[in-house]
Amino acid sequence: MIELTTQCCIVGGGPAGLVLGTLLARSGVDVIVLEKHADFLRDFRGDTIHPSTLQAMDELGFADELLHLPHEKAHLLRGILNGENILMADFSHLNTRYPFIAFMPQWDLLNFLARKASAYSHFRLLMRSEAKTLVREGGKIVGVEATSPEGNVSIRADLTVACDGRDSHMRAQAGLQPTVLGAPMDVLWFKLSRRDSDGSEPMGRFDAGRIFITINRNDVWQCGYVIAKGSFGQLQQRPISDLQQTIAEIAPPLADRVHEIASWDDVKLLTVAVDRLPVWHKPGLLCIGDAAHAMSPIGGIGINLAIQDAIATANLLALKLRDGAVQESDLAAVQKRREWPVRLTQWVQVTIQNRIIAPALGTKARGRAPWLLRHLHQIPVLRDLPARFVGIGVRPEHVTAPAMPPKK
Ligand SMILES: Cc1cc2nc3c(=O)[nH]c(=O)nc-3n(C[C@H](O)[C@H](O)[C@H](O)COP(=O)(O)OP(=O)(O)OC[C@H]3O[C@@H](n4cnc5c(N)ncnc54)[C@H](O)[C@@H]3O)c2cc1C
Image 1 (cartoon, rainbow, N blue to C red):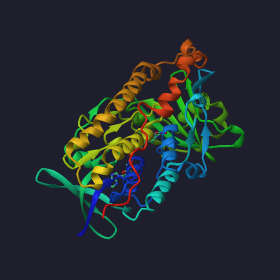
Image 2 (image 1 turned 180 degrees about the horizontal axis):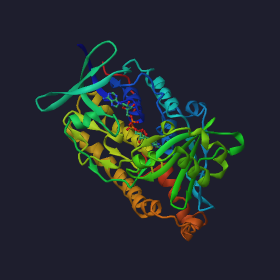
Image 3 (image 1 turned 90 degrees about the vertical axis):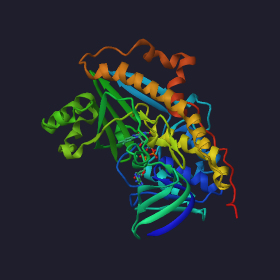
Image 4 (image 1 turned 30 degrees about the horizontal axis):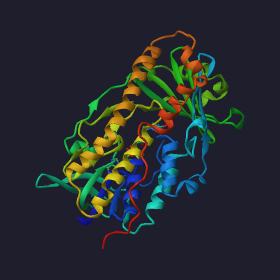
């Protein structure tokens, strides 16, 4: 068994884990991040970098370099509702230096953060290293045991942070049980080729109870088709041509290439989950990001929330970790700061799920969009609400954890 010691062991190199690792290392905290995969090149998990995340990157002095990486800027989010064009969110009025969503492959963002963090000698990123067991001593979690290419590793840490996503093994190990809020839908993901003549904007299409979104990933459209929860098995009993025809009907400009969905093997299921932990911590352990609260895909804000959690955690804990003085009450302070933004965001998402998505999925009607939705962008006080909710979020966090050298 290889034995390592650190001030903070972060389990999971997703958006939450890598932002937290970067911020803590910048503040002079010795950090180990464990990531079970060999790289960040995994399938689609959201490519959105929101204005509030860009603002945080700016506060770190990273934004210009990040925005040199290939990306698409979306100043507007549009939808087509039963044939009618609707402006869903207009980020251009937001009071921020970055009034747009940057669509960038998530692996580019994660690679960028890993490179930035690696500039600090006391930051270690262990790839292909999977945390298996929490180590306990006298009622406190004091680290993890993990597998790695070099053999089993035991990491002793003042604090372990579970950033291991919505199926968090670490929170299960700690006996932390999320409260399930539920969702009436799942999402099918697949790709269709993209041509320059298609345009580049992301688009949501809502048509007679069917919901279809397309996200620009250069040469392909990443497509999401919303289905009633648990209905994928039934759909798969039908020929793939049924799905091809549905997509051709709802998105006529893409009808000439729906044959690219050649079989059900080309279609991936995202089981939508919405949940949150009643308590995010145990002595020596904190859960953040999806490990503390899986978000609905409505608004595409899971990444942003995970990053905001990481910023708040670093703001509240960096100096205490550096001085070796983190108490469980400090972990509770992180939950206190982030819980209500999560609760409010999930409340909005669940309300939309239950009031709009669930009834829509059960109907074939092609009614007009509600008057308020059609005219929202003409009413200044309401116009910015969707853009603020999606782009900035409830209680955006600013980086206040100072840049410090490690303590000798
Ligand atoms: C198909 C899909 C599409 C999505 N689309 C969007 C979108 O458009 N916009 C958006 O904002 N959000 C989207 N999301 C949600 C978003 O991906 C998450 O909210 C966000 O990634 C959460 O970040 P996180 O760091 O908390 O967890 P994750 O991103 O889940 O990262 C967890 C990391 O931990 C690693 N890990 C897990 N267990 C271990 C272990 N035991 N040891 C070591 N490493 C471990 C995993 O490999 C992973 O890298 C989508 C999610 C899915 C599944």
